[in-house]
Length: 225
Image (cartoon, rainbow, N blue to C red; front, top):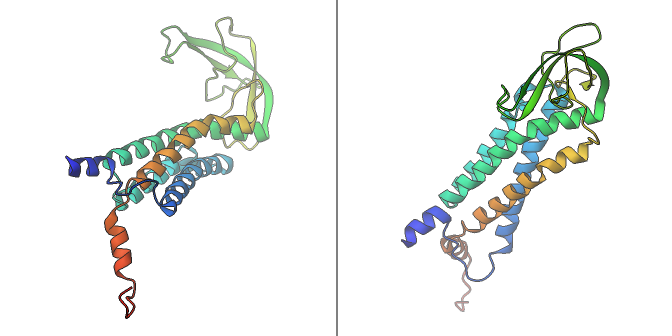
């Protein structure tokens, strides 16, 4: 049972508080990974790199963290938890990245609703309305808008849509009070939980054999001390 517990949750072979350097290592690994997931996704959206903007780069960062914990011989259950949190953060980051780009360099324009779908039991799978819209020249947008599209919306109505002036992210309906700190704040919970889980996984990976092997390499004085 002790071996099973060590394999699943990590050995945690220390008494009292864990070594400070181990806690710092876990904190740095978690912060670097969380920052990497968010950073590469925002960079992909800002510069129009699809592989990064869609969260694929973030998934690579999450996989790298899981591999690092595996090398550290952390508990398998904790590795799975950290990997799952990393994937969730990577999947949440693209929408926040688009919102950040639009908040920084977006331009608001009016579009015309051409059709409305959704509502209870609608095609969106949620209690949400989706509006197909066309710009002022009558050219249909490739994406459907749900922000600002509601039950009372009818074809021919005008909606405010924010565009990326460089066309690197898709347009979306205008959000009241949208700003880049608000979009990053939406990811704060996922990122903080990922860092905490990584810290616990690294700390619990500590084995006395590591400390013994470190002491065995010290030179012994002639007095035996």
